[in-house]
Amino acid sequence: MSRLLKTVSAAALGLLLVSCSPHQDRADPAAVAAEEAAIAARVFLGRAETEMAAMNKEAAQAFWNQATNITPETNAAAADAGAKATKLVISLANESKQFDITILPPDLARKMRILRSGITIPAPSREGAAEELSKLTTDLDAAYGTGKFEYQGKMITLDEASTIIETSRNPAVTQAVWEGWHTVSPPMKDNYAAMVSLANEGARELGYPSLDQMWLSGYDMPPEDMEAEVARLWGQVEPLYKELHCYTRTKLNQKYGDAIQPATGPIRADLLGNMWAQQWSNIYDVVQPPTAPLKYDLTERLVQQGYTPIKMVETAEAFFVSLGLDPLPQTFWERSMIVRPEGKEVQCHASAWNLDDEEDVRIKMCTEVNSEDFNTVHHELGHNYYQRAYKDQDFLFKNGAHDGFHEAIGDFVALSITPEYLKQIGLITDADMPGPDADTALLMQTALDKIAFLPFAITVDSWRWGVLAGETPPENYNSSWWELRLKNQGIVPPGPRPADAFDPGAKYHIPGNTPYLRYFLSFIMQFQFHKAACEQAGWEGPLHRCSIYGNKEVGARFNEMLKAGNSQPWPDTLEKFTGTREMDGSAIIEYFDPLMGYLKEQNAGQTCGW
Image (cartoon, rainbow, N blue to C red; front, side):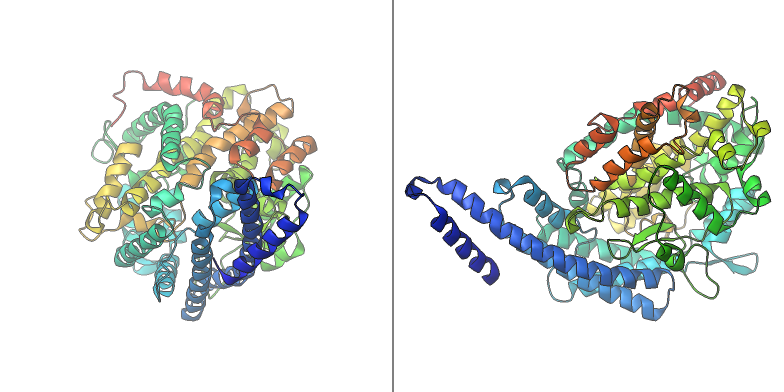
């Protein structure tokens, strides 16, 4: 026990003795000990939260500077800030071990658990370890952010490569670009392995067998129960994915022939319109059903009506304001990075930031005027509105109910980007409105994003859990990655991979150390939120036609859920908005039920699976 806590405990005990009745000798010793522990814990946590809040502001600014202007100087500053922040949190987490959580009041016990498991990449407390780990993580992030490769005589960025993958229908071109981008990651492999070793050492010091178990401890249930929960949720939605995979493969086979995409087995990763084959909506033109087509292309409408990146963000803000939430602060517009700046190396991966845990919210995007980024800005502002909603919570409760909530909020709002909403904001007209005969087309577009993503989401962290648990050594990093992608997604690379390949590192969330389970959970929960909101709004039509735009009653209930932050177990927060305490895939099944029938009909006679 520290000197401060010894002093506090003695004073607290003195107060207890002074206030005791003449029968104080009958007091329950366990109760006295519990009350003394609670007082000491409250003082400790108050100090910890004050120190962490100050450090968070300092570190957030350094990380922002590095992400929006990658230079040796900003890399060094970010590494230094990261090391200082890590050392502080590790020190406090270790100091918290003196408290027995089982005898503390629920709010204090919750804070202690968050403090012990809340750091993503923990460093060991030994001299120099935090600095070494911070440099590794900063270098990994910078390597990804500055990644380029030569294509047709010029060096191109991920942005440029992604545009080619999204738009080209020449398999030789998509293979060349896919393989080109995957050359940026092999140099990361040694640093990644070194980081894993250090972070696992840090996790063990905090009482966890390995870092994967520490990550899985953040869901108000034992890690093994959370793994079982993920398997249960995937089991609910896997049949829909398999039908979509079968249908998409048939369409690709019809377009490219057996030599490029066989009619059976897995799908070639570079043919799906996305660098990581995680979302397939960019190949809608290849797989669109022959039923009534949509009468508009959202990207074309955005361009025709003069939308700029700023106007797209303003439109997303207007959605949240229509629900009764406050407009974003002026500083958001002054400080956000909404487009790629000239003359700087930046981390373009879209993200939302809160630099002071109060009002300094921002987004960082290299926004382009297209339908994908129109959805993305709604998603990122969801993070910002969540951050603002819980700003009055204590520091350790300033987070989502669990990380899946944070990712689900903006996507839940984006599910209301329906034709009706687009008509309300003037992007389409009455003449463009799709009738019921276009439902299959509407649902196909959404499924190519939402359903195609689910197995990729569980694959990323399934791979990482194996690495962090020590089950996958560095020499097996790449083979394990593709084994899981084949098993879960039915996806294979466009050609043999070189011996030094480190393909997981070509996905930002691996070198960026962002846990990925949150995205899988969010893609399940956003449909739960959507169904609950549509029921609150009195909607009686199909779920995919429902938009809550302009509904302030739903907005008020929505904001109440956001304001709770991480102050209570997530089932309590979920129940408050949806009426259920369990994450559930039934809403996503209901949403896509008309499409499921269509896919089964189209796949009749096909050899599905891989």
